[in-house]
Image 1 (cartoon, chains in turn red, yellow):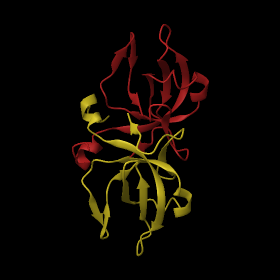
Image 2: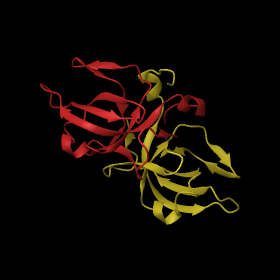
Image 3: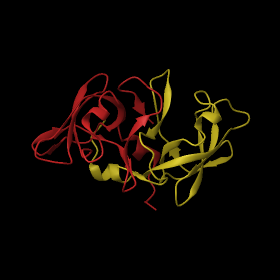
Image 4: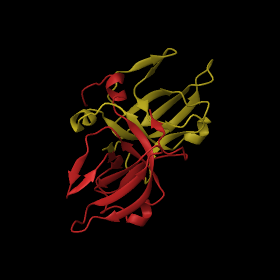
Length: 109
Length: 109
């Protein structure tokens, strides 16, 4: 069991819903996809290790959940301006999505 | 824009996928549902403010995402052993779910 956190610690994580508006493989890797995500007020570029589990076209138009207040990271020379959330059991990996369509940029809480 | 967090701070949040195995309204309220969630190795009881958006039977069998390492809270006299995640835009509220079925208890990262 992980150490307990407080609700305030959880609330420091800025989780928002975004829609994937472009998606392509990162050349020279077999794990990475480069995505553009519409977060309502802004658009961000993400690099995510999804290529073994998703074809780019399976993700287009889909709503995902993004951690929006991580410091940007540079992966294979490409800036990733957030991290998307996915759940995996070692075999299957599925991105998290709201069960109903909500406005892009909606807060998760 | 929220203050930046580190990846380590994010990783302190124990987020896991669970399946809703029972769901009922909390009597005397019009907002609260009491849920039982199968998290693989364990089962937990949650109280969630979903009743204005979901009928109990719409949630049965659904996989959701639970913050598992918050201190339990007591809401209307009922212990809530975690918090489920949902996204809302003021009109629509949707629980988060993995886009593909994964094993109950799968970690979100």
